Amino acid sequence: MMMKRLFTLCLAMVMALSLAACGTSKTPTTSSTPADTSVEPTSTGHPAFHAGSGSRRALTAEDGTEVLVSKSTAYDIVYPEASDAQKAIQKDLEQVVADFHKDSNKQEEDAQTYYQEFLKGGGKKEAFTPYTFELTCKPLRADNNVVSILFYSYAYCGGAHGSLATFARNYDAKTGKVLTMKDLGDGVGTLAIDNVVKFVDAIQDHGDAFFFDKVKADDESVQSMLTDGNFYLSQDGLVLIDGEYLLQPYAAGIAEFTTSYDDLKGKLKEEYALTGGSTNCVGSGSVYTFDKDGKLVSTKTDYDPAVSDDGAGNTNTAQDAADGSVSASN
Image (tube, rainbow, N blue to C red; front, top):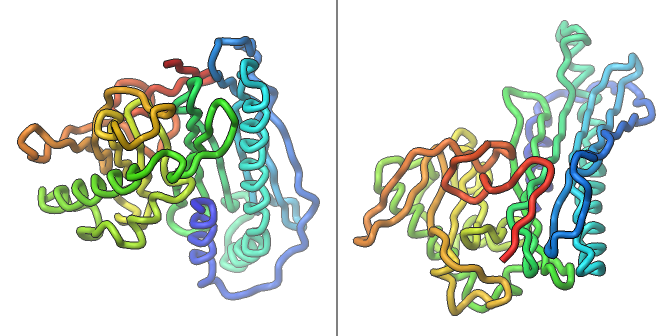
């Protein structure tokens, strides 16, 4: 769903271009980055991830100029204790990457048109910036019960800037099944949405006001956060992803709403639960929480939900992901 939103945004950017004759594309070129062998895939007793091979695919115009480039990186899951689950998760991850490249290539005609318009406007081919699509991912929780992976996607289709999106995959670590919100337990989604409404309304009243407006629980934009790809289970709790243009403008970036495992107790199925965590909203450079009196408290943070390698020292869960190999146990 998030990928479709990205490509819809890209299509809107280029529709203003007048149709022109497109150059005939050459056969796409593909290159792969060798797998990271600095860490040997060994059994840890729970799921572990290692940097896998990356790929780069390019579509060119008749003069050899690259007009569309798609790049992806991937992780390989190692979990011999549950080999069937490992195979199922790995297969699904590979399908996500394959779909990404397939969807990217669907933009070829628009990319060719964009290049021809660039040349007609006096641009030099050496200065041309091709349509660019990038996909990276980061495991955020990996234990004997849950595997949650966050994907970071970037798309540039001309114009002043590209578009960012994050989307998630959640798996039952014992079976490899992709988890939906309904799988997590009755009332989990309702509680998470209630927190979204509470935070958005309080932030708007607080004066920071980086959302479009206050929201209601039954708003379509709010309910869409419960769909596959828009939530994940972190070390802190259930995280709902608020993508660009969903509840706030592009300049505000991406926001995340976390409902802690403690707050989810009694609703979230025990096999997927941890303990502790912090109920918060991260967005526009701040972490928002409520104090014991229900007053909104904001703290500045360097963590950006749209950045896959933000580093350490942040207050949300993404800082726990490591480069190259990530694992976590109960």
